[in-house]
Amino acid sequence: MITINKNPFFRIAAASLKLKVADVDFNIDEILAVIRRADDMGVKLLVTPELSITSYTCADLFMNDSLLEKADNGIEKILSDTQNIDMTIIVGMPVQCGGLFNCAVVINKGKILGAVPKTYIANYHEFYEKRWFLPAEKGKNFEYVTIAGKKVPFGKCLFDLGSGAILGIEICEDLWSVTPPSSELALMGANIICNLSASDEYVSKAEYRESLVANQSARCLCTYAYAGASVCESTTDLVFSGATIIAENGGICAKGQRFCRESVLTVFDTDIQKLNSLRRSNITFGDSIISESAKMIDCTVKNPDNDLEYRFIDKHPFVPSDSAKVKERCEEILNIQSNGLAKRLSHVGSRGCIIGISGGLDSTLALLVAVRSMKILGKPNSDIIGVTMPGFGTTGRTYNNAIKLMEYLGVTIREINIKDACLLHMKDISHDPEIKDITYENTQARERTQILFDLANKENCLLVGTGDLSELALGWCTYNGDHMSMYGVNASVPKTLVKYIVAHEASESDGDVKRTLEDILDTPVSPELLPPDKDGKISQKTEDNIGPYELHDFFLYHFVRFGASKEKLLKMATKAFADVYDKDFIEKWLNVFIKRFFISQFKRSCIPDSPKVGSVSLSPRGDWRMPSDASFNSFF
Image (cartoon, rainbow, N blue to C red; front, side, top):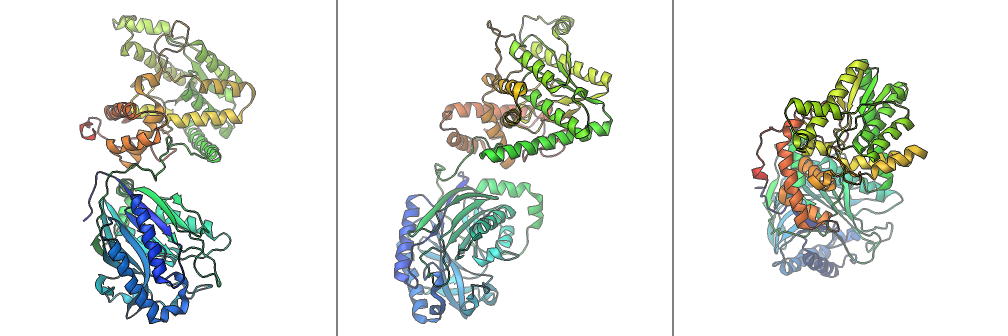
């Protein structure tokens, strides 16, 4: 039975071993040394290479009773020395059962819990394993095998590690096959796959091996831990490198040094809750689940809370950490946005588009997208009507940047001051303009939106929305104000990514456009609905009111994408932002995020069409369906 633990993370390790060919005693001592080292590091699952007890390259010595008996007796020392170690350990050894099988043997607290034979026996090019070993198929009639005098489950097995972690095992060539056993094991419930391997090296193989491990972890929505035989194997014909790789859902998360003459231990804190969440939401995976069963063996280990020392947590999960990939990602998003807008413009027969330009980040990105769309459609930039609408909070800096950017890009400029219209409206509804409350602010936002809609009708143009994903998540938009448009190009782009895209465009520009974009990037984020300070600078800074966008984007990504709990979000954010914010500060804004996210669903339920650009989207027609009156109490 799958159990769920408060700690969603599970510490695993893949080891490459310093060993001697056919020297069982030496190898057992080295395995035990690595086990002790792993235990000191809090590892709960350890996988060693293929045939780690004997070594892989024993060749015809596998025919000798002395080596087989030595291996069978030698494992007893591992059992004896690990009785008080709370860890699941996987070693490789030859096992006799009618014939000889290349097996992974699973040990927990001094007991052998199962033996899993290799499914596909490599027997081509440099490999000739069928000379010694039988494939798993030949042992399917054996439910049990005897190892070290103990009757042990044999064959297709799964191991319940507790905490929601289910272990499946395959051996070396199994991964290279057309239908790896791990695919079937994943569909039976395994979310951690361990591979005991002895893959030799030649030019380009390491890269290919990593791609196999990463791709299989993605296909199976699992964590894949690969432990390869080291340079200490025989070098008669081949050289091994001791590759140790751990991948999670398509990404290589940890890998050890290759060609090392000492034992290597590669450790990673895998996120079991994340994997299980991905499987719940992936209907294709659910539809593929098979009814065939494997032996489910209880292999529970205690999984106390850990410090995530062996897991990198990205502060900005929406933004690639590699600068080359940032450029590539920005270009991809701009292409999606601009082609989406171009399609909509051509479909409705619009002459051009209308955009409210504030001199802030979001409207700047929308304008840059519109310029690209005009190029796609073969239209001049003058078919874009940029409208600046100074109000009570507009500062000279944002106003001037809005005008300059429109001038430099060659769009048609309209300026409509909204102050008098807003004062008249406040008079009509008997609101004192000296009361700078939500009515005062939203009056301006809705007046601007009314102008843009009416102007779009007058000019036969499409009104392009500028609001971003982060604002939608927090409800930081005026309902039926800036919340509404005819097509929202930024609706699935988070604020942290908006900055990077605008910065990318600045880096690709020169002269006046570059300088203006850089100043916009340097301007505090603000709706500018309250009057400037005495120095004429922005007084209403968004992040002073609702908290840092980089924190909210972090919460948003992990909450929506992986269903993370508040406790998990706090734990991860505390590590990711340890050099920026303290835990109390993070928790304060996490509470704000959860409350605002829940009470703002009614705004998201009726947002305009917009192109999806990333894995997280809040479109009510696509990725996120949530009742507007859902309570947030269960999430605290």
